[in-house]
Length: 66
Image 1 (tube, rainbow, N blue to C red):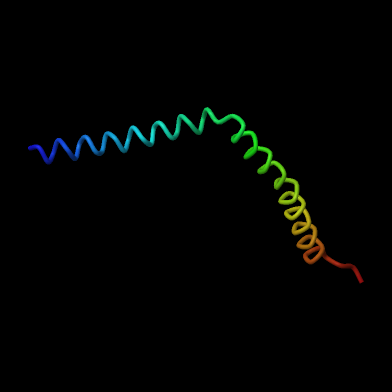
Image 2 (tube, rainbow, N blue to C red; image 1 turned 180 degrees about the horizontal axis):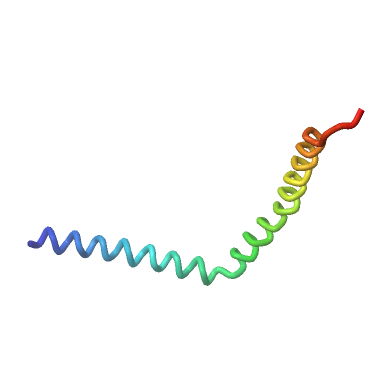
């Protein structure tokens, strides 16, 4: 019985640690802002790549008149 109780306490401690880590991450406004800026910097390049790929496919599939 003591072993079961010890396991339950250990699981509770792990869960509490994960919860504290999640709360700390939410409170890290500066870190979240940096991540948001970093991900926003990559979006225009991805959009340009998709557009370029679409143009290439359209050019290859467009029926050509001779």
